[in-house]
Picture: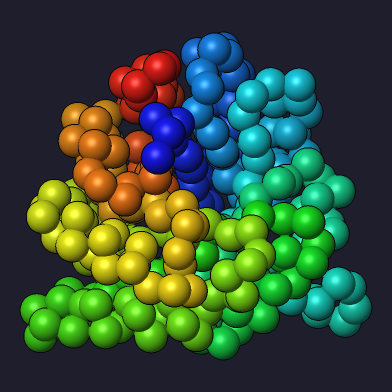
Amino acid sequence: MSNNKIIVGNWKMNCLKKDGGNLATQIRQSAKNSANVIVVCPPFTIVSEIATILADSNIDIGAQDCHYEEKGAFTGNISPAMLVDSGAKYVILGHSERRAYHAESSDLVRKKSLAAIKGNLIPIICVGESLAERESGQAKQVVEKQLVESLPENSSNFIIAYEPVWAIGTGKVASSGDILEMHNFIASLPICAGKPILYGGSVNDANSVEILAINNVSGLLIGGASIVAEKFLKIIDNLVGG
Ligand code: PEP
């Protein structure tokens, strides 16, 4: 595998035009020589704004969700075409916060993934076990089921993000051994073969280097630390090859 990594910042429901714009401007400046894939995922309201700031840079834009229909009577929803029109290239799908707070099933995530691909977006499809599932020894089974039910055909272009639910926003990072075991397991599944596998869950500037060195970790999905400029910029600075 090349040294190039995929670093995705999930801004969640944070940032107005001004602070999001400042953050994007700093990332643009700091990452201008990076050979890595860097993606920022602002809230829908400022996707266009951030896309303008990052135009002609080496930083891509992602969104945090999309609907599976192209258009129509779906009040409050956003289609893949609307995201592309706003400047997005990627879309995060099946994040555990969507699964938990919006009751999104893996079946729905799969429908969205297919629509995203059809609409020329690259989906970043999230899976991960709860603490209870890990403690009862079911982590791999749960993750495999989510993958089988959420992923489109392997022939399509998508990215997987393994995010143990108990590690998201909690400051508790999975151990290197647990990350290695799960990433090796995911990489061994035929439906995931050859796909990039990101790790997410309390990644910050102090632990990113160690996590990125783990076999089959193709990159990071970062929440909290991605909206703190110094932390996100340090994570990028620390990448092999800058
Ligand atoms: C996430 O939102 O995908 C995430 C991993 O959040 P955090 O980095 O804050 O744990």
